[in-house]
Length: 289
Image (cartoon, rainbow, N blue to C red; front, side, top):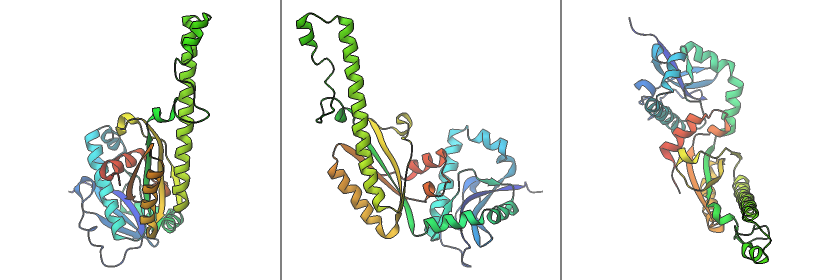
């Protein structure tokens, strides 16, 4: 007797055409099972079968603690979603580890959330998500940079105070610390304003935009500050214009390093992206354009 299976759900799209899309139905996904589709309520779910014993709630919790398993499974999940995006005009990607007990539960899910899925498909059809990250060197925006709000450099004025003989070493230390804090605050304010200028310019070309929290520098492996971690839902016929705009912003703001990535399935605009999804997505196809 064969082991019962659960159903791993990758994405939802409109009901599929009779002929299977090239490149999707020949794929294997998580756990090595062939990708297939389940239709209901005018929608089509892209799914695969996984062993129920190995993908129950408790088993999944254990898997998620295994970084090697997590990396391999997340990459397989996103490969299938990428293939679905290439095969269909509109796709709603689902969160990593969306697992239903069986195919019938998937059909029920499509029926219960038909309105939500339909609205999301209308939102993303003909549009693609692009990511833009902005990094700065804090020293570029700190004390000594030009501007009326620049704080004095640490230690500035110390010789004058000592010449007057009125400042103790403790007072000098406190004054330097205050100047350093002021310089740091100034740097943050200037960098944040620069990031906002860039985000506003990019958002004007996109249909929708979203800002995410900066990634942890220790995990993402960058130096300095990440001052923008933005996602932009761009009409497909404006993708080249969007890339050109990023290039022009690089030239306009040479003190900011801009990183363009994509195209991505529209996770940020369907409410379906988790931290695991974002990490796997960035790890598979991030590039500087």
